Image 1 (cartoon, helix red, strand yellow):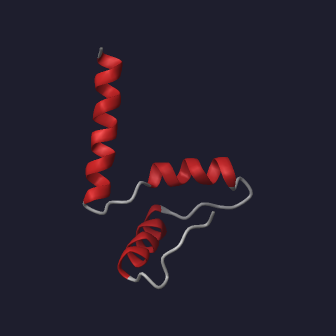
Image 2: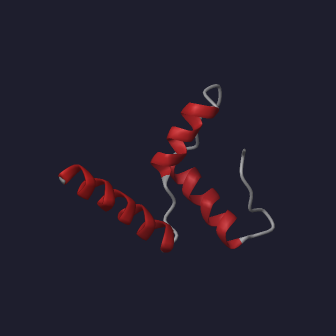
Length: 65
């Protein structure tokens, strides 16, 4: 029961952060490690700036993959 409750809390927290526009740095790091191990990931500050730019400047919005 507690495992399911913890999982639900994790997804709820992630959903709320995405709804208010807070990027998921941990998810980004996991993605970089899994799919781009040869590249150095951005620092949190660089990642946050890039996500803000992508959100508010739709002409530049895009994904690496």
